[in-house]
Image (cartoon, rainbow, N blue to C red; front, top):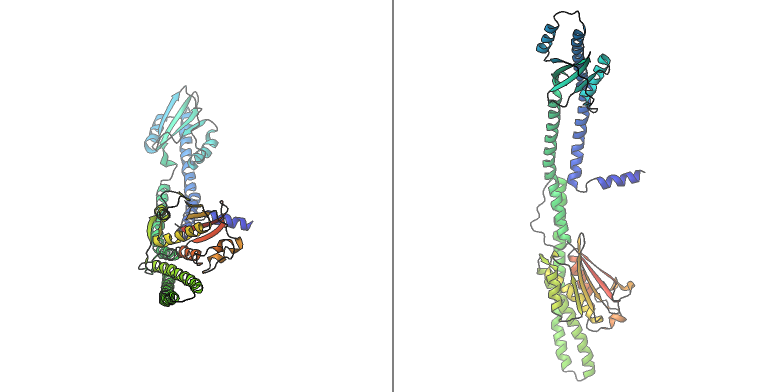
Length: 439
């Protein structure tokens, strides 16, 4: 029971910190206003209303008795005094009956109080209307063959302090909530900036001039994040520079080996060794190109349709089918994504004859799917083929042009953008590579 209630509360509560903090601040203010209003309304306003209504009905009952007493002299003089001193308008209409249309409001405390005091004095021989006139109440009482009409100001039964109280209880509460909103905005803004910076860094984007701000705890967390970001950036740059330097330095001895093999008399052995050297050169060239783009390229917002079309056009192959959703803009490193797509399409064309490239948009991600009709990969090998230099012995591993870096480099590029690559069985009975990039 409590678990279900807890889940229900989590669903209806806002997800953002600002609105949750606003609820924490505003709820006590609203509850306090409600309590004060109920106490005032019950103990002061209603009691004042009852006393005023009881006094008014007593005056009306006295006036009614004057009309009923045939022996009382100076009747008109007394009525004139009522009209003058009590703000009454009294009129006797002969040959009229009480209206059948009830104008009483069951939800109004003024109407309930007036009805409660009139019923003991006049039974059911009365009718009143508090809605037809803004500041006047009309009361009709059955008198012989006619109706005694009495008009009196509404403030005789309704204390005017209620509106002033409502104004004073509402305005300060709204003012306090507005002040709380301003302060909460200032307090949550540094957290939002920190979250945005962490999100951009997680996507592999360059974070410019991140300045910690806010409370000391938030500022400390921001400082620690900035230190961590700089350490990770330095580590990645050092790794890329070191591997790039090693790859570059290895090209010199490889060139010398090729010259020595050209002078070797045993051509069969020279041919085998030359193939191995060419494979090593391809491996080094792939990594050098990849590290160059990763190190210097900045992110930019671009339409993914242009990237895919540009990559596919280079192949001039009518066996590549494209299905792209329009206007899919995303913030990426264009050359790196081109490199990734080139590796995936090269891999598909190496093992299959037909390739399909499609892109769609979900709620939070951009999906790029590459399908082929090749022999596919066993599900148990999905994780291994993402490792550098890993090659499958059977089926897809029979191709000699690859060096085992294609999927690894593609995976590294996508992960640097904050996305991921997953493998699956293709509808074409080959391999499906699904690329997911955060929007």
